[in-house]
Image 1 (tube, rainbow, N blue to C red):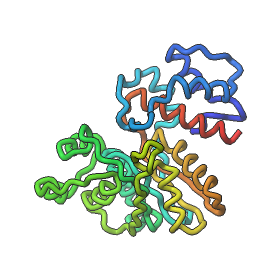
Image 2: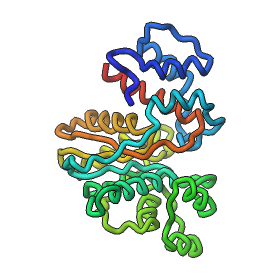
Image 3: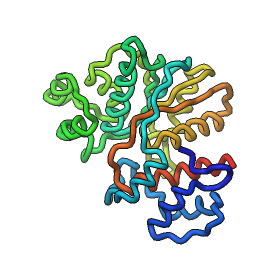
Image 4: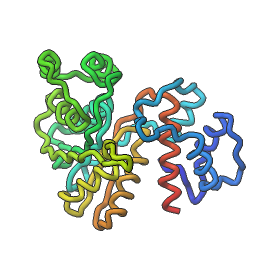
Amino acid sequence: MKLIENGLTNAALEALVRMQGMEIDTHRDPRVLNALLQEKWVKEKEGVFRAQLGGRFSTEEEMALLRQLGADAIPIDFNVEYNGTLLLGATLKAVTRRMWFMNVEECRTDFRLQVPQPLYFLGSRRPLDSKQEMPEHVPAILEEVGTQFVKQWLEDRDADDWPQHETAVMNRVQHWLGIRRWERVCILTPNVVKSDGGTRPANTAETVREWLKVATPGRYLIVSSQPFCENQKMAVERAVKEAGKEGYTLDVCGPAAPPLPLSRWLDNFAKQLWEEVQLL
């Protein structure tokens, strides 16, 4: 769901802003609102990942607006011919949800359908979060997503062979879901050196630049999760443009949004609005 319509900010977004007790003018200038939200709503800073943002969950009134802003699933259009699929790196829960979504979409109408191949895993070396990506968290993740892992995950747990970083999780979840028909290409982007000499995990733009080294121009499908689909599609498009590449067309799909703390919604909308403002 776009947050800027005909040069004006989405009315549902403005209503959500006012619901948070923020006073804004009524001329719906996206640049003005963007400046405000960058200051007030962006919570994800260096060293803090979006998935770590907590706080209260949305009220029913807030959820009504969030649904207008893109909480529903975006299905895969199997009638479109793609050159491949980009699975963006994320937490264990998000990766499980995205792969489960792709597997369900394949079987939704015809078991012969297949996610566009090859399937590029765009991950980083982000260390796993000990508070939400360990073996003890798996049962709750599976219950929330509504799927099951094959017994391999138990064998990995008992052998103390747990994945250590984001890309390793992406590889392992495919096996744990028992999906063997995908042609996988892992784009493992190294950590980035910071100005102070330390390192940090690669972000979306940096993983996309690595992907561009092996992907030929064409049309590609991005798999993300709502409410982040549109934002991440634009982030990938911006990364391609900044790399000086042409001939890449990108679509996005993804499962409906799970229950999320309100702070994660607000952080995402602020980032998406920033992306859209850059195109004005």
